[in-house]
Image (cartoon, rainbow, N blue to C red; front, side, top):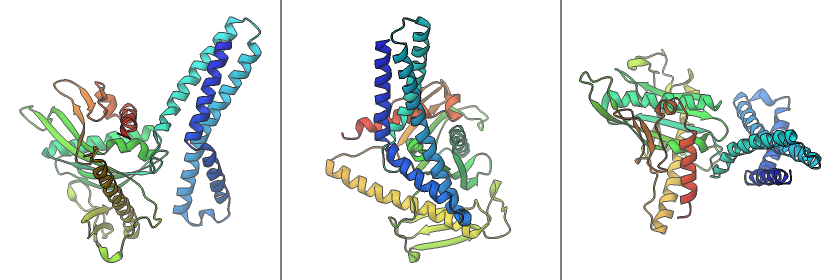
Length: 368
């Protein structure tokens, strides 16, 4: 029993260390502040602000409870093991040992969150998917990737908003922009930034030839309007147009969709998810703000790498992952070298192993 008590003590110590790394105590203070705001009579006066605060509070509560409950369960088992230590009861030992194994598995799952240490890992995320070379196959591939991320978000209980989507004429999509909100949404999905390659027998080829298609995925954190990104009004060109549906047909009788071009950088964003032009403009500005912030960070990163004499990795244009459907089945990440033959699960949103492998790869190479 002494050995088992030591294992439980060691596990509790690991939980405490993890809580310290993730600033759980500081997050408790933040949650208390948010709960105070939520309790105010005029809280729902600003609906958009109220929703954001409520979501942040729920995410914090979920994260805190995961660690608090695990620590509490370990302490209970420690007490039971200490009380049972003087008795040689195999059934009690087996019960505590089995519970210890369960708690160890729980901790391993929570340990994954320790990989989320970058500045914006806890932010919501904006994902843009663009069909690349490969014609209708590439457009179909872009839609397959969109579905994969929607399924991933569903499994994580993340909230998804389709900000912009252009359907292709024959099949698939030309592009899609999604906002995904939830605990560590950007931390998870930043691994998807880059070019995704598909190899398969094309369902659109009468001769059933094997085709290679590409789609680009851009992943950026949602950035708060806190002055870090300065956008001058005279740097913007704003166009309005009618929202389009399948095949490009208009689905709205008013010019509610909005496209914003940032003239100095030529970055263009659009949004047609809302019926209101004002709301679409706000959402488009949010996407633009995030893209400009990422551009600033990329410039800093480039300078740092030039100082270190390193070419760097992980730029948007890099091919990051291959999905081979025929002649064999395999999905392989070219950064972490993680691969699996279970392509069906991957396309159904089971991406955790790829994400963990990527985050571990980043951690190993952080100071190289």
